[in-house]
Length: 68
Image (cartoon, rainbow, N blue to C red; front, side, top):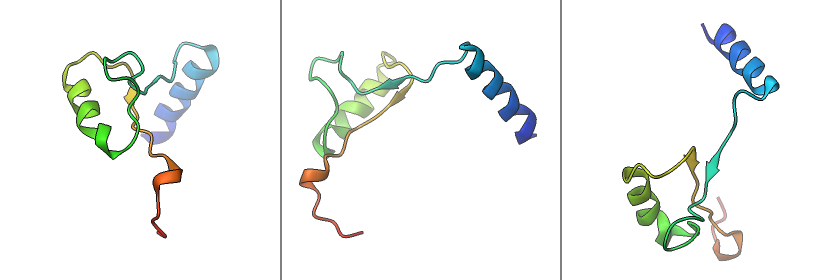
């Protein structure tokens, strides 16, 4: 089941009929979603049904001290 679906998606993407869209919140009142503090705003934006595509919250590497 996966192979026929993946092939169809690849064909649509190759022809330009399928577009990948990432919504970082640039068009929202508070601006782009950056850092953990903006996760609440990103979820609120998702529930508002104003988002387009996948919503992404950027996690700046400069603030990360994790050694995972």
